Image (cartoon, helix red, strand yellow):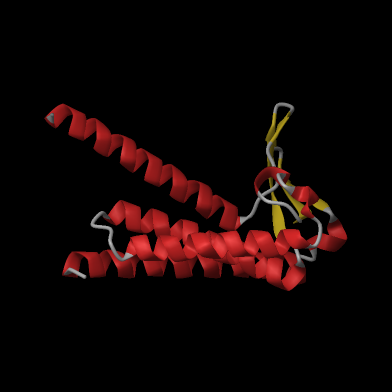
Length: 166
């Protein structure tokens, strides 16, 4: 690996570890200090609640009908994705992509830990406003979505710049 790739790899790993630590610390606090399972839902602002949801499915509740095989399938797919991201992380020459990959991988690992510990993912952030309500999510989900968004924006900008050159 070239020195620049080594630095980007290190940044990606640091982002992964920070996301994983923030995700697991927030879930620990929600479960064992704030005791959200006993409270159910707590309004924080007119547009934000902590609402306890045990997500046995994947994003937005999809594929929830897989029964006991679900957590095994979801964990396997997530860990394969993490391996692919880490492999790609060793090859990236772009800092933004290293950050995106680290965020996605850290979030995926955080949710895998939940599935292995609890058989479901701990979701608790509930945004809503003007009759609109988003799905309940967690720090790991946020990191995954932000990482994918950063990767997409980077790719679109790179393609646009490349089109101007050619």
